[in-house]
Length: 65
Image (cartoon, rainbow, N blue to C red; front, top):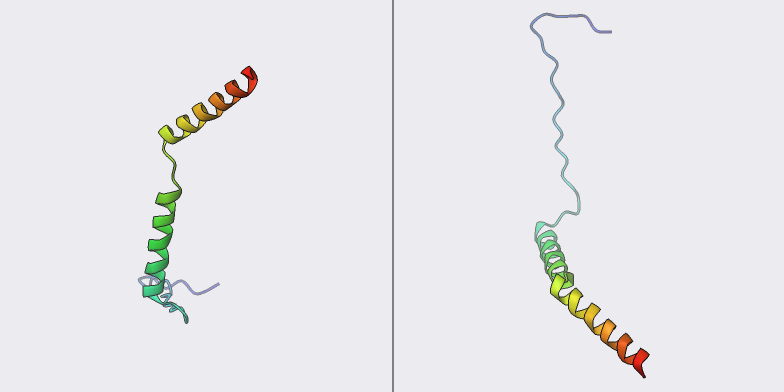
């Protein structure tokens, strides 16, 4: 244990880490590409309803023949 000294406060050490292989331009391109992909892959509820109706129609046609 250390000696208690009134008036002196313990301070946190500063963390100054700089990555060796960080390229901000490449990182921004990657983020932009991920953002675009996520928008393309997103399906709206109308498309799901249309797909369900199409499957039900195909099943009805198959069962009536």
